[in-house]
Length: 377
Ligand SMILES: *Cc1c(COP(=O)(O)O)cnc(C)c1O
Image: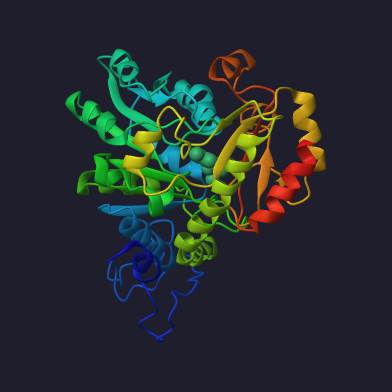
């Protein structure tokens, strides 16, 4: 099945009981047993719910995995995956991961004895050099947020495997429409489905797909034990979102290419980060491992004052955290999504006060460019 078809017909479709063409919202917590232990596959909705199950089957199919899991947020998904590890285990992570991922590793999971080292994983030598005797996993975000750095999934997963490590990929920015890390050697792929997969700024959710029966059993055990599951209504919203994921991603990217072209020529823009640009340091890898470059762009306007001017003047770009929705969003990572990263560390990473990140929506590209033009003037 091709991707666009899979988005409509993947997972579980319809309802056998009624012939409804969509999976209904099973707003239910518990299920009748005919005799003790005799049920129709569902006992209690933390353990399993038919609407959530349909979504979990869908992400499994989209990511070409062995099993899928849905959580109450991207952070709940990431935390559950990290609970596969134990006190004394060590994880190597991409240095400019999502701020919340950095926070949970360095402020919460570290207290439980799960250690982490952050390196620029776009350079494989950095991964090799960070491997310790207790390293259990490599956690890669690609493209990253907000600098759109790219890690070679296939090469890094191979390196991880040679060293007995699991490879985990945060695929939020690319989505399974552009990139399927499990087919490139990763073991676990995860998403903040709050972003492109949901796509309409109306749900907070996380999704995971794994590539083996063993990981499926272990992660289901954690999911059921710790309970960070997604509710049936939100599961239904994500299934609905996925139906247009392919169309939206194409539209996001079309608009983004035009905006990048405009920004490149603009004198007020000193630096622009987009993997689709030939001068992007990892452009060739991006081209090889994904079928699209996505709808996220960051650019530097030189100072906090100039950034504030742009933010106050834009009309179609909403100042907000988050990304990946139909409406265009604009943010300043240093004071928003990445504020939880210490200032000196932000500077090291290149997340300057003048850095602006935009999530390009699916409005008319001419309107978006007009808007940026007047805001930058
Ligand atoms: C937003 C985001 C997360 C966290 O997901 P939530 O749904 O907000 O909990 C994780 N990774 C990336 C790349 C994100 O953009």
